[in-house]
Length: 257
Image 1 (tube, rainbow, N blue to C red):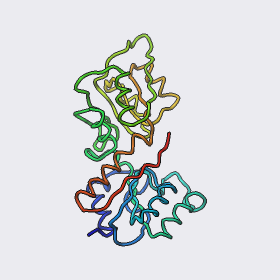
Image 2 (cartoon, rainbow, N blue to C red):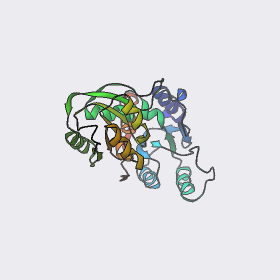
Image 3 (tube, rainbow, N blue to C red):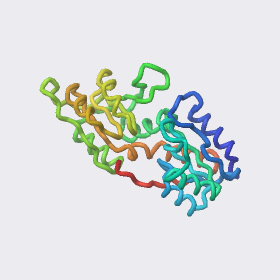
């Protein structure tokens, strides 16, 4: 039973097509631990509390959406980063991280998982290129913004920030066409508006996001970076458990952001 760490990396790489996707961090096995893997802990971000939970549970590997070694960060292994990596190395735990491939996957990805839970169907890429990061789709039955906000709250267990104060040129309308980019995807709101979306969903909100929503007549739902990105890594872990008989446990280290 179980897999080698390199076998597991190859399986996930192939499932997510990660080698074809340019990213801000390395995707795959980021820190090498024990060669044999049976027990995996999954989570959103490779924080020290998640690592400590994995140690408690004698996990062989941690699989996350937000790993380490981002292009913009210092390469020095010290401070908070050093403490995290030290615990992984001392306890011989593998760390696997998959960022954009786990946002974009048509079945297991964060966008696809959130769309399914919210009833958004017929997903297509929002960008006019292969491997679009944001997506859009439609609801079978149009809904009012407040009703959709309540649906989001029920699904994610947190109340979204809703931008719905349009200028006079855009009277309040029902929502049918919905754009989605989980995490920090608020910058795609203008593209969503240009594609005729009635609403756009992401995790975060910036100062200019509100103005884009108001002046272009598009509802914006800021639902939490962490909250919108739980389900991709959770779904990937469940797939690995089902297909390869691995023991996989999702641990949610909550984050209000």
